[in-house]
Amino acid sequence: MFHNCESLILNSELIKFEKEIKILLNFILIGDRVGKSSLLYKLTDGDFIKYIPSNPIDFRFKLIKKEIEKNNEFKKKKIYKLTIWDTSERYERFRKPYYKRADACIILYDISERRSFDNIKYYYDEFKKENSNAIIYLFGNKIDLIGKRKVEIKKAKEICEKYNIIWGGEYSAKTSRQEDLINVFEEIIKSLNLDFELDQILPISSKILNL
Image (cartoon, rainbow, N blue to C red):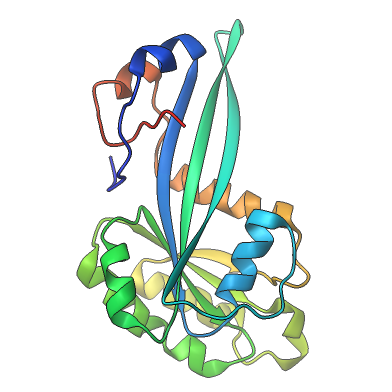
């Protein structure tokens, strides 16, 4: 299954000889004002930023590299370049055009704020109207405020089951390790079913990018 990436094969022969598969993916973060930008900075930079002014739309890049052994003889490298779009809850008309190009959508809520959880259905419906193919994950944020928890994990998993959303876990831009966030984004990549061989993908122009 191929998704709505904007990548192009710029030099397939170069990719063949370098034994590399280079893939561009678009992810998007949506939800109320629940720390989306701070969590994204922790993923990409490893730093905690307490407050980031919300632009209508922003983005950051993250490279994830994987080496694959084939026939116990050599290793081939897959390089995933993630463009992660960070949306503001205040500007619906700005974020909608970015839904169409997304390979994966991550809806976030604040575990200490019930209203952000109740609004999951609103963001789910809004996204599905524009993109019915992308996978959707649900993250709980601000696990560092567990003493003020208003949303139990059980409730989050129930809504995931109801709407066919994948549960991604609970995190904190403040206390979670960057490694933990990288791991869950690697799981998202796996769920896109991109385990193809180089000779299978070269004829297809929607996935490969010479980074």
